[in-house]
Image: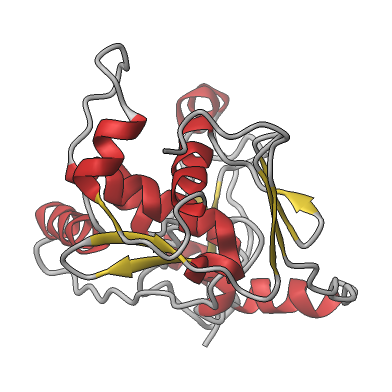
Length: 247
């Protein structure tokens, strides 16, 4: 079984039916008057002779954190898409599969999803891509003086608030900090964001996602809060003067 792909037409032909494509294996000519009207319509291409289209696959690159930050989750999105298909074609059958990939897998989300779900085109492209030698792990450097986090020699793209959160935990190494203390210490009345306990959880998840393979240096103490745990591959560069947030 092979997959047809849905694409925008690059020629001036109108979109024929799937069966006529299969039967004739060529694009029929369309009157000039229909060219502009049909130009924006998607069409099926690369349908092998002797086959027929029985459905389609829509790859969605979206992780749980991005969905949560948008106020939803993967389950709700899938349910709404299935509902839309049912509304458009009541007799249509649907099946949803969640793509699971190793934590920290690089690349565009949708490409990771295609590989995880064994998309033939994505697998072929991966086989054609030369293997890149893996970089040796260089550990974590938390540079408080420059407010910079480096992971394996690369600077992590932390926001100011994310670094503040990490710094607050680092300077109180080994102590569990509850959410209320983090809110009162890291936010003030002049901030645009109105924090609550959920705000802290979201910021911690963002921070952990950027820590990648080192995410467990920020520990969750269930029912209490968060704690920084130093590993052997973590180094901290202190400022020459004490940090103003350290008490």
